[in-house]
Length: 522
Image: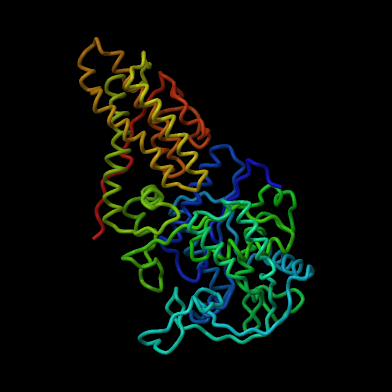
């Protein structure tokens, strides 16, 4: 059993049949910010991401590109999926690929275990299949085709024709887990979040579960079924197991006990796999279910879900090349309520960059450090007897730190940033009201000037710590300029709101603009 301070969190395992778009980046930076927060809070943190490399779609894409499936996935992962982690400043602890031996061998072991326990049987199967989703579709997920697909049945997500598959397959007795799953959702109310996702899952399971086909015999790009090599394991069963195989399931009991169970953050379109099929598989194997599944909404561009096939796909570099990775991370984690759909537009990103980052946080940092340099030769002054205005700032900082931590516990990075931003707004108002430039003209106000600038600088210290999981680059620059001993990522984030941690006498350095003016993309 994992310890209370263990925090193991995963992104979905991405399907690398095409290059990553900002929707993939959104999920990844959200998980990275949560992992960085817990790491900095001293929790035993582990962040996993990776790629799901088997299945029919991958095999077809490789053939279309004149490559073997392995050559094709190697190229995609190396040229597109590893670089995006660097582009977005993601500090993952591991990256699993489902073609790695550490994964394939353990998947066979797991599937064999549920077969031995009597949860798998052979049967005949006929169903409509979407290659894009790698999923058999129920009638509710099928639409009549229009235009060139008139008269055909198409996938509700991809709008592409479905294939009628008739196969002899192996089935997992998913139907036997209906009551146990409903009991899980009842006894662990936050197993599925947010509430809209939880309600959807409960209603889906209450409607009755059908047994799940877990093998395919018409192609061979996959992990073979251990007792019947003419079948490969259904790609979703193989993929879900990555969360366990990556932390030592079947190979390293100590590591697995330390890390498992995990929190999974996924897009809402793959919620059922994670909140229904995955816990049922674990129950069948006698393994603990995950700690929870959080489903975020879709990123919409022009009202359409982000996808390469519908030409709404925007590469993360299109944003980071203009605004930088911190702005990307800040924008997606603050502008969208985590758990709901959100719309992306260049205009909104640009406006928020200017108002909140450049004029809000960036300007606060540069004017505070500049005034300490100008009026106190770059040395942080002593804090005198605080007035009500100074004490108000101390309270704002303490409350923001506590509220942000509570929001991160709820998997709401957007609410955490809102809480932290109350410090930015309060300090900008405080400087405007206290007019340090006017105090500097009067020697009798020297002590008051010192208190005002100490208050602003100590507020910046708290901001650097609290915002570091969201904007690692800008906060590192600010931390260096503040001249505080010790690394920024070593500062305990849950103590960030305690007042007075910036020692008077610290030498403050020059600070280049944290969020420089940007040339707008044409």
